[in-house]
Image (cartoon, rainbow, N blue to C red):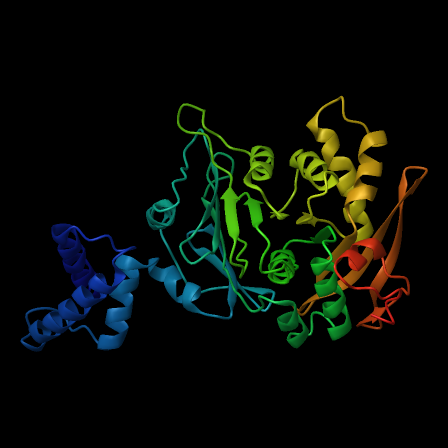
Length: 406
């Protein structure tokens, strides 16, 4: 047994005897690790045990093993790493700046299971043959997704999408080059005016970050209710209530889907509804809420702003056979005011590609739309002149009649 493993076992025994929770009492565990490393090093000087080597490295290794996520902890601590995924115990990948790389981390089948069990410990979510998928939020806000055999071919598939908060406000996106000052000012005014905004984009395009930044522009006196599958939104507001879905229990009961949360949110006196993402029939409940005059924002997976509109006109049809396009399309036209489409370039840079304004007129099943800002030669430029939803802007005290005047 190597020196690190000896110290690790000694610390684990001390944690057990003292009844400590490594996740919640990390400071106490760190003190135990420091003392155990010093004690072991003194014994090693007498030749009683193998030498430990660099003490700082030993402390870090033992603490990560006992109170952290072992070999994965250095990747989680690396601010440049955005996502970590495990395809097999010997295939651990990480993404930096939008580009993936195979790391030198090597695990065992059992260590993967142990790490997942540790990550799920505080989430209240479970993973077994009857429920082979799990989504959970880690204490630092990172999102965990796990799939086990026989849904996967052989090995457990683990994804950890880290919560990397490089931007929390629209002006931060301007500093990062994702948004121009004019576009940021327009979006800030649109949020203040109570426009309903749909944020679209592919996976890892920055949709949740954009939604967080838009949410930061909501008025300080507004009451906001957010609904998500897994907690990801972090709105810097005073009056916010966050709701997340719940899995069914072992008896197959107790599940709380997103549709239920949207309905419950309306009973909580919200001034603004923020839906983390619509994927299925919950889009109908969101549209009904917005059609009742409640301002809101949401994200959706799509390849373009116009594709996002088309998708939002299709998803509510999953709610039942009695729902038709004749009802949904005009409802989308009446409810959604703007679509902010986010993209990720080949170099990993995230940016807003287009801001699309929707009109209320529908012709041949298509909703009237016009581009407000669009990328031209790589630069986000103003492409419209009329101020969309001028009545909502006016209600918020913004009386400009054109974007140029604004």
